[in-house]
Picture 1 (spheres, protein in one colour):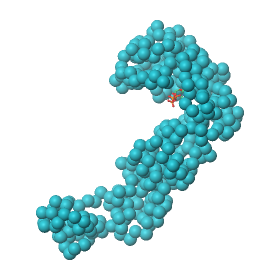
Picture 2 (cartoon, rainbow, N blue to C red):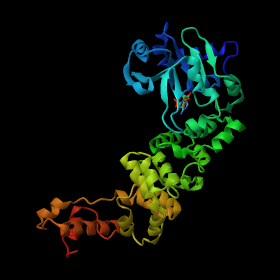
Picture 3 (cartoon, protein in one colour):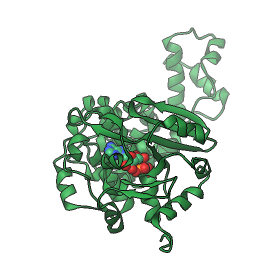
Picture 4 (cartoon, protein in one colour):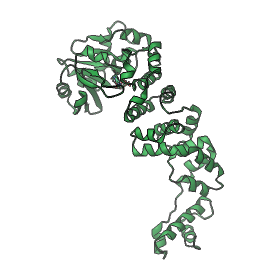
Length: 386
Ligand code: ATP
């Protein structure tokens, strides 16, 4: 628990000073800047904050220069990120926001710190401590909500302006263990994520997947997004997943597999590999049936070679875990010691036959039909025409 003999502002400023990146912030004396959002919220409830967000009335460039480090500016958003050795701090210019239509990105204009707090998502995130004077400024009811561990929007249009806030709400509720105020819950229930671009939903999904227990917020969103959360299935798939699998991608693929239309998945603007895995996961039940029907390791290889490991783990969780585990831990690593050059040198002409000979030899090796070593492989590959 924070020390009650110090003011809340002092607790926040002391926490800031104690961080490696806090040293940079201390150089900001004389600049009208405040620390805001997650840093203040987490410090005041005794959690370790993840990152520092600063808000400044005036130019972000001045602050960035005082911090040193490398500056990346996002001018249309009046925002910048400054990073140095092992630290990075987000700085935003205090702003007012206007939403041209529900779900659209806001039009922003410079404003006072108090107005900046009013445009935030939840009251517990609308608390700031100024660096200059150590003054605590909070949206109405914010300190009470924080003390009560409650999540409440600042106004009734909040989820209409920006429906992605329902995804943020789910994340905070589970990560912090906070209770959602009933009126806020009713407003969230009416929110329509359909007004938001897929890329913004994709970005929020990514954040949800990085939470300590991603399935908890995702389970709250099954009526808003085309996802299904089957915790037992995901756990079984994660247990099968090899170290080279991406756990977050596996979860995304597992929750979108049944209900998400391909067009929706495309709209999320995922990376190419992510999109590929998520789309391929739709075939998991088919793969599960094929794994179960496979009568030999080589048949398993014919089904699974080239399929992403995340998709294989999901298929295994739906069907035969034992065969899938054997493929993932052992069989998929079996490769030939010889290659096409060896066959060319032995007089096989380049072309499909050469490939077929290598394939047949690998199948025999998987099924334990040839001895170990190059010689046995070569004899097998050079045997009768495949
Ligand atoms: P954490 O980093 O612990 O998830 P955070 O509160 O710092 O929490 P960020 O995503 O870094 O979260 O956002 C910083 C602050 O910006 C938030 O505390 C909130 O006040 C504000 N904010 C972020 N996204 C929105 C949004 N969509 N609508 C309104 N305010 C937002």
